[in-house]
Length: 316
Length: 252
Image (cartoon, rainbow over all chains, first blue to last red; front, side):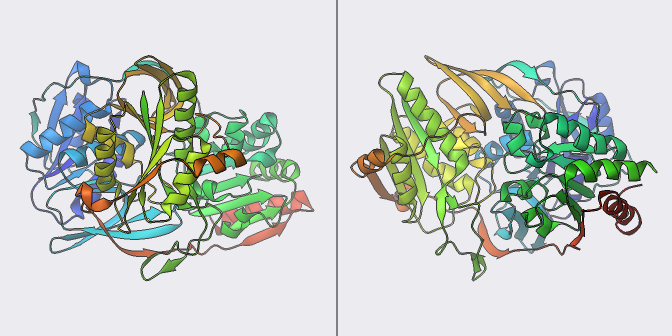
């Protein structure tokens, strides 16, 4: 079988799971596609998954309410071994990329990490992935009988749910101890659409001048467009914005329909997080800024004048 | 305590990527210690400064040139270095097999590894190494306090950050914000030349690559480059909004 570990939050199956279903069908591997639901109070998740695959395996237990890399890896490897899975798909989320290497080691399988496409010829699987801060696209191959894959988020089309509700099976897991204790959480609350889901992202860099400048210009424009906001590492380090908004090598990777970069010079590390956006718009006073090399549209000028004028023009 | 800092020598981010014969060619490029790994080295040194009887070992797996990176880390202050020499491309899952064997042999208590490798764009090495050792892991650590066998700190999770507590031994992967890595001073660079740097062949570790790289290309997305002059801000802004609405159709 092909095993998909369902990525879910707040009782809903995430978009990455729908994308994994598409990826699973493109692997050319034998057997049914099974979805594994790990968590607590997962009824709605399991029901939603039941429209996507051939069978649903459920481990619904109170002690699975909180994610843990070791517990997840142990559970996934156990179910994969018992079901003789020839491929295991895990979301390309931060947690998915954190525990998937453990699954690969447990199954003595190669890890195809953050892949953007897959193809196969006989027993040989090929996949492409970005390397060198997303500047190179490399093709890797393997003929291993079992593989672990994390598809890059948003790289595969989301599968359409079917109409047939497939059977659900409860699975037993061997107990695993939680060795990392989570003693507190801080989540930055935002009323805005999340970076991952946004079709338009408005981003600010040093050129916005200050934390207040970010609010006026970047948030001002984002409010007008219903967009998410993003920041460069420089201004996160300066404390103007929270880390959760950072896009780039050490932050998030986004691929929106439009990425509007305000006062961003375009360092390689930042480009690696947004360079695949469909349309890039840059506003910067420096005509030689590297961001203009990757821009579809742009204005060379003072962001303090241009952005308010854009907000006014959009309102019209 | 004994700390292992795993480092990689990677292309300087400012350097152009060159391709040759279906792969990335680094032979003529400037290489540096991966920034993410420097955080780990720095943190290891800080722990040593606050706890007596602590040794910091740096490990690099890679071609001959990797020794330059190890010398840099020795100049930062690491006590000794191990270079596992290979010209082979090793994916992180295979690489972790070497890292785990070295950790076991050297009897280390704590491993630092970069949160992401800037060559393979991977998050896998730290977690895979932890799995081979049957240790816990905490990824994307941006604040850390060591108190005896207990490590507490903060790390980035899916959305926002979490406070954690874990007992040694453990693998930690780094994130920006953890610290500001020091620069090697000239006297320390001189001193580093006398420190132990042991080279070992990869063969002793019995590692086979799990993946083969069969091609590399630089895909440059064609961009429109319609860049307007913003001297007349209202006019330029209106024109840009018009283009985004009518031509790109990305805004309503």
